[in-house]
Image 1 (cartoon, rainbow, N blue to C red):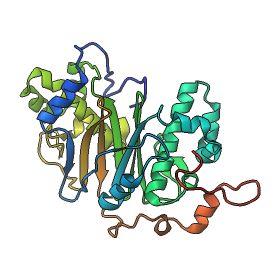
Image 2 (cartoon, rainbow, N blue to C red; image 1 turned 180 degrees about the horizontal axis):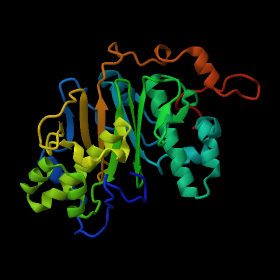
Image 3 (tube, rainbow, N blue to C red; image 1 turned 135 degrees about the horizontal axis):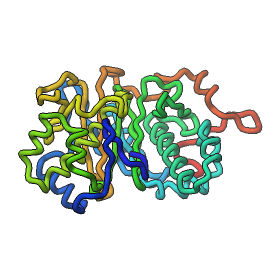
Image 4 (cartoon, one colour; image 1 turned 60 degrees about the horizontal axis):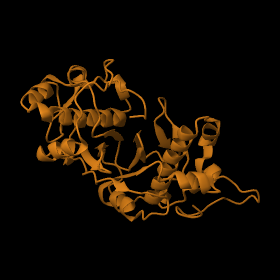
Length: 325
């Protein structure tokens, strides 16, 4: 979810602030009690590791790389204000942003400009840490619709989400990946969301819950559906009423509640920073079973050299993931 934007839930519905306030602790406690937080892995789907907090570029990236090696996917998160010093002080900002420099420099609003730069740095440092190369060697490009990908690394999928101060990046070598985040205390029109988002089976499950638990489950369903459609590259083009999830287990369901095809998918919802939910959808497409994430196996060195910006003296501008920041 983008900061300040009301959500269109697949049928013109808009999130509003017209329901009773729900405190964050209550939402998280409800989901925990219903076992609706954590990881669901299907027959082939690889379990999604909990997100790793990376508050600055020179933090330890060990868990990020280990998660990619062990599970085929990894998620890193931070607040954009935590990464603001890196945006403002690094002398390497222009080569780090690469093709995104013009967009950064042309953004007039300082907060929007800094949030944009921080999220791109998080993508680059996360990918660099996972793949064992310098962040300047990561070239971010965009598919139709704005979804980022890593140029020249076709086997590596990128997921990005941000809302409020939170930003999160996912990297997968196993298949498609999507992320979505929301504040746990987000207020919305409960009836409108149910009509625009829920399948008949989901609506029936919600009806069986006490009223004070329904909003928490809807919020989690919302983030799961956003993550899944982002992973498919469909976004809001795939109506949320055409597929569903088990409210507690999180597995894919048809609108009538039957188990859906898609045993290669794994899903996870985790609380972070005590006030946000991050949901992830990860596909295990059977890629790279050896688990080798070194960039040398996935990117031709000549292409890597061509992507690397040159310094004024004609040499490549390199550097490790935590250098000079």
